[in-house]
Image (cartoon, helix red, strand yellow):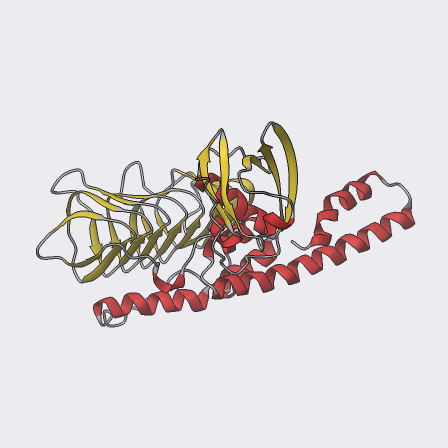
Length: 382
């Protein structure tokens, strides 16, 4: 969304309330020009972020895009999906004869598919396959064998593991800037900005990435998590409740520790303390904006800020306590980070700040994601 797009809501309100025919035509023309400019700009940003591995930004942008643009953006991920497929293929050396490793549908070539978009989406039980969802929040009512592309900004209700039966995500792409719970993935991608729980299911020829912890839950010996020819990566810890099995070659990596017992017959490589995610995938971090933050004093306190930070340019200072960002009262650093990411999409954020005994408001305009800069630590008095 460019700077001019901030006027769109006002223009649309003016259009609905204005009775002058000529003025309505002028306003309508202005709206169409701004919307065309926004689509063009967002397409460019989407491609740039996609190339840089910023799938969390792409997901937020998808959630806010109009239907036509969102379908086009979804298909722009095809090269990345092919790269992921190639990475998974290299884990086990070859594919089964006659079976292609294709992840997710190409909507432009589908004769028909179900499309759900909006702020709060409920996908009905009648939706089975070839479904495209882009929304802020999404609830899925049924679970079967799915070939879906799901991009959700803030909430994905209950759909990723079935209450009963043997639901499978086959050839699906799941992008969600929230926590996730997965049961069965086959030839699929699941990338979540949050913890992921894998509950007594199977992950086969799939990529699973969590910006947080991965927890693998096993109920008993007959029902256990199996990882086959897959790559699982977490920025935090990986914890296994029970024994992990599987056939073929798989890799599990974590930014922290891995607590797992692996079946001796399973060929699963474990890599701890990995600082970077595979395939160059990254998640937004306030330090990219020259901010060092910590929860204290009733909000997020600024422990360090660079002079080059866009926030410094708009009046944020060291020792400020951020009590609210836009309409979000952050109770954790992840909550602030997600609201900040949404601000990057909209290109501005409103910060409510406590400075000493005063409450002040600052508006920061954000032009994309700046080059990472280390925040300046606060000087300590001796």
